[in-house]
Image 1 (cartoon, rainbow, N blue to C red):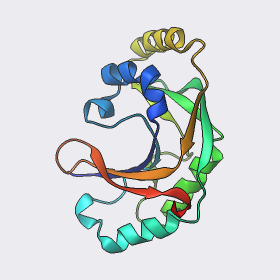
Image 2 (cartoon, rainbow, N blue to C red; image 1 turned 180 degrees about the vertical axis):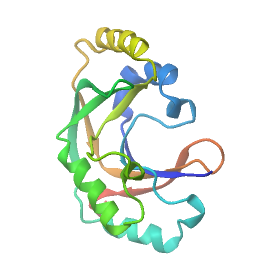
Image 3 (cartoon, rainbow, N blue to C red; image 1 turned 90 degrees about the horizontal axis):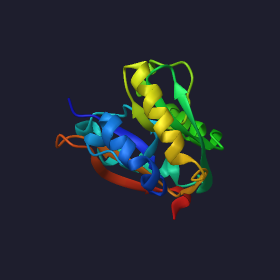
Image 4 (cartoon, helix red, strand yellow; image 1 turned 90 degrees about the vertical axis):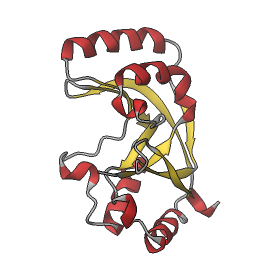
Length: 175
């Protein structure tokens, strides 16, 4: 089934996280670059029409670009290693704004009560393996954090071709 997502791409993180994501994040193997998810899943790609694109464009136009830093490696449960963006609140606000405008698309399909903005480094079902990957990542990240970045646009990704790719980008602040 084809899916879509709204994300902030973070190419600044690729030099550090790229090799870890390639080995330990299934989404990277499917073509998803380093990113902070705003809303996944969004709408089915064949349901995203000109009206939806215009609504997204209008939603993001008044929101000004913002700077953030990926500051520390953290975990979501026993299966996800991620980098935390600081400040996290602009990401949460964007998520809630999208969800408010498109109420049939709750973040993560309403599977999680809390919105924890993050850039996934590894997603592994085995806790012992995740511990080893986390230790290796800590060594690689030593003196390379924080990673400074700017959120200037939101990317609409979809996997209608079998691999994730950028469908449309929406500038923040109407740039």
